[in-house]
Image (tube, rainbow, N blue to C red; front, side, top):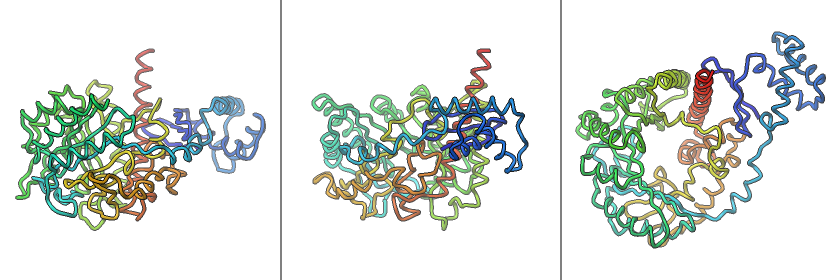
Length: 471
């Protein structure tokens, strides 16, 4: 299975199953699909393949390729095939049985430390932090039991992850600090290491909190939507006043104090800012080097929701952002954009390629009162209530359903070139838009495919730059 596309002047061929990426000339780009058809028709030997390709080009109404050039190109293509770098078979499906039967080990918790918020973000899936339920703050005792569960359910795994989430977790800051201290007390006796993360809207950030975060938190996610007018429109206080001017100075302190590493400014773009590349550039111009701006996920009844007719505009905006991203990297003013970060050499392990985030199995969300859900986006949907910190996982059937959720269980993933990069996408989005965690969020899939194409093209462009420097 191959995927071909042209981006920013590069002719790119992705061999999906091997992950090999080829940047080729125009003739090779034209010939590659016809060689694949020839081989599928059992053509043997260079002469036979050449005849099939020449006929295919003619039948398709394309310009013929001079015989010597055609021979040379086909020989190179066949060499790549023999080397396992082109037209490769599926190398992952054989692992599905083993994957489904693997031991279930929990390695990460999303602690909903506060089901309350001091902002009224217009697109908030958590309903101002309440998650279809009531306001509540997690007690130390509930959090303590959640960490005990994680240690017990993690098997022999050493590295464990805990994200303090909300609502706004800084509304329950003392409990956050107490749970970090408790987690640290568990590390040596249980041979574990906790990696704590905080996700915050920044309104309550101050120097004391930042000092603690820099000592104890491996990562911090800072919510901001970009330009002041966009941020204040979508992330206001409950009284309607904006929050941009409050948070930006504190965020700059975070970025500088952490030496531009181990943090993200994380935004959401909506129908109000389809020119979201401007928001990414604004954040970069403000001095942030770790940036994520992601598409809103919302029912099309919401006025800010993305619609199918917006897709061409959004795809063009990703192209624009990718070109600017390359330009800035080359000028020494680069930054990281989360959706353009891709590993073409190693990448995730087989399990991650097949199952993605591990929601409902390796990763769970915990409510303030101690209920377990597959992830933060399922919280409040009672059909996905899996258990609690007192009894553990009671609904093992839900866990097993998520355990069987992978790119081969999703019909729309089977022929998608991006499946081993997105691992099937978000189960919650699939469920909310298709009624099944094995379904698909079609608009999200279109955008994900574009981001993968841009990320690969960026790698090609930057590799080209390095090659020119050597020469």
